[in-house]
View 1 (cartoon, rainbow, N blue to C red):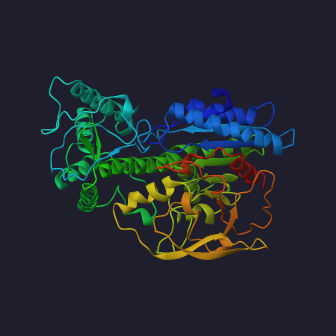
View 2: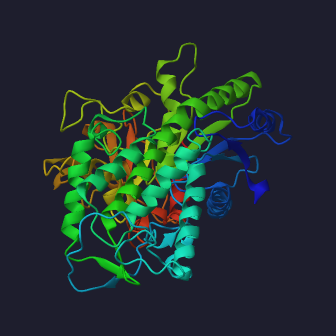
View 3: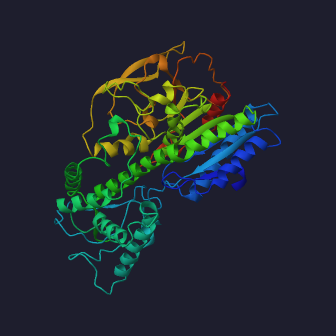
Length: 506
């Protein structure tokens, strides 16, 4: 797998872990015996570690190569793949997976406590919920006797939780023992045998707020989010959700699980990675792209550069070209194509006049307006992507109620002449680009298409003035259950058929 692509490694601040990797890529591009025609730079999404990212790139390239072999007959065609590794791990194991919990009769748990319990939600400290005992060692009411094996099990599980999340939230060890105290308390608050009090909800949020990574590229619609909303607002919303659930608690081996705290933790870490993606793209990948473009020019090569990012990787690659909008002495376009696959950022990111706030513009509007990309940006979306239809908006919904405002959203019209029209849909203003496509663009600046099968070619003749191609991939990207849905259903050859088509255009 390692030989299929050349890696680039960045830390959470966006700095290269070693410049040798970048130099090796430049060397391969400009001095390859068979000239490199296309450099494909790939960016995985959130919740990938090194092994997961490597497997992701192996899977992508394995799905891409047969499409290339089928569609490219030019013997001189010689692509080079580059994989960006960035610290995107949001949580340990698959804790996002909905666990099969036992419904119990309505109980009115007592307020207060802060007992131990287990981190449920599918995985606890990286292990399936059924693979270890669940305990409540700190509970004054339901805790087992001190000699019970569940006590030591709970203690070990809490220690694992702290150890597993340290590299995610405190990679540099800045917080030291404070981190152990904080995350031990988070573990105790998330699962306890009684309803958390409002004060405990506030404490829970206060602890997490210490570990915020803010998004330097947030859009106007994202300003009031789980990372920036006042403590009082977040506390009131969280306690209301906990109270609403209290009539129907979930039980496992006698201990109650209150899902809202777990959901808050998931959403917080999800948004933390969103900010990190922007930082890595702007601070780390952008200078590499500039160096790559300059090396290609100096070598007299005509190598094309293409970016393909999934989820927060889509935000990362967009952030990696954004600084070029304000750069001097830089020949544009910086890259030839960008494919955003189920992007987890604002649907209004490329809008110069956001429909629900016409005084505001999307943060990445300069990317399309100033010609940083040679071709229209390909935006692949699917309404079956639950991470983008629910998890992404949840980061703002927890800070403000959903808006039911109706705005114009572009989509395909089922007409014989394949024309496209606008239709009205009631959407919340927090929609993600991977759920709805790029919104807030005037009709001449986007085209809406359905994803095509591999035996049907794309015709991209008339794209003058078009900023984005909104590609509805729902016919193919539709497999997966809660909570992420089809967010990871991205190995279809039709996706790479599309990516190859836009890459071959000019």
